[in-house]
Image 1 (cartoon, rainbow over the protein chains, first blue to last red):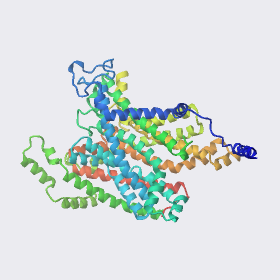
Image 2 (image 1 turned 90 degrees about the vertical axis):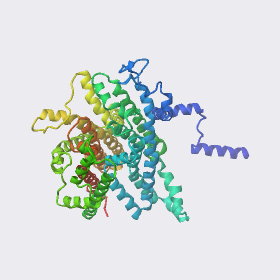
Image 3 (image 1 turned 90 degrees about the horizontal axis):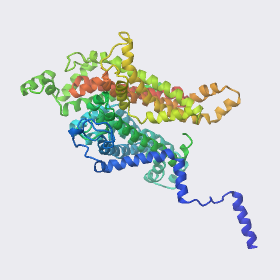
Image 4 (image 1 turned 60 degrees about the horizontal axis):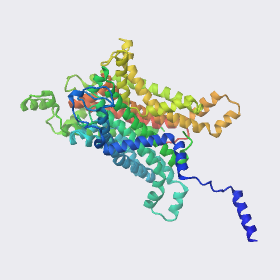
Length: 306
Length: 315
């Protein structure tokens, strides 16, 4: 009897089609993931390299990015200087590696201070609605209407030019960026059955917000953060290019393209402009693609739209 | 809907007043004295003081502000500190170049973005689709100023040709130079905007093409062309408008870079220069002008939702 019962049991399992998947080694699984998310993996490598250089940049650069060598001015790319040298004889590759730090710090501040605040405001605004929503959204509009260039110059004047001012301005301008998207998402989640259910069980508003709403908008927050990082890299490069960025002499990708480099590039010294420009594009590309991959992995509902 | 529009419009003056007060106070409280800049390096303190008195900068800020507001209410935006001409004339003179760059860029980005977005969704996974996706992601990653710099450098290295830089010539004065001057920056800003639009049109279009009413339209024997253009595309319009709105603002911001690099004498370049020179009346006017454009653009976007999609209601 017992044997027949177990046979029936195993038939039942077979009938549901719930066969356990065949054992797959960790290595195979990793390889499969890499093959399916090829672009995402490349993006992650770009981002990881960038973060590494952002943290350790100046200490891993092959030579001192500020070292002036008048015997090696404007040399074309060679084995010794893969990206050539600039007018002061500084190694362009070393300047790019060291310049990652400025870009990294500014992106980090934009995401944590700026986007973090904006995300919180958006969620609160969508979840609570009413006058809170009204207040936050109208302030956001007034904020967006204020030209950021003016704001930037105000900070420069107050704190002096440099990393701090530019980071604060880019962070502040990122603040309301994510708030509208997250607001609409929180607005939808507020009315879902599981939030209603939790509320009817007597959950406090704070608990609903932190345990039910926030985890469900998290994918959007992470994807948004990746996008904000990309935009802040572009913003920093553009501001530095315009000469509104870090102090002259500091290795910075945007600034190294501007001014004299441009003049020299026109007379054939293309490497002065080409390499920093390509590196900026690559880093932004890395964050954009990583955002896409994260969206696919984190939120299955958005899958298949690519 | 009209009530909604009116209520939103009624906020405009309030936003203008707040923005103008902030600008007005910031300009005067923060370091950087227009009188010192105008007097030059070796000016004596008395000279600077004389200029400050002449410009009326020694009065209390509140008095200066109310005085300025009274003039603005009469349509008088004052004279620039540097040229002494009226701010209105100086801005109007520079307006066509800036407006044209923004307008052309927007036309380029909408036409390119929408056409290729639809094509890419309809011919999914075709070489065209891959090209569009590559273009879109690159367009969102390569900084516009880098492209503009390449635009100046590459032809001059390869063919010893440099595109015209600087100033502004009206279309009817010298059409060829006009297009050679404004065309390239407009194209580059336009393609930058098109990148985001392509992605959005493609994504929405793919979703719509999977929906039941599209299948019904095919089932009742409509031509593919009709289904795609009238049934499917219409439903991508609402999200599209949002993107066109933000593309407009992005292009408007990007025109600072374009005018700067190509050295075009336009309004945004004027704003930048005036900020550096602390030309208060110009900055005050242009900040309000910019803020008005931003607020109106957002309003137009919000109103067009209801116009495009009858299901949307405003309260």
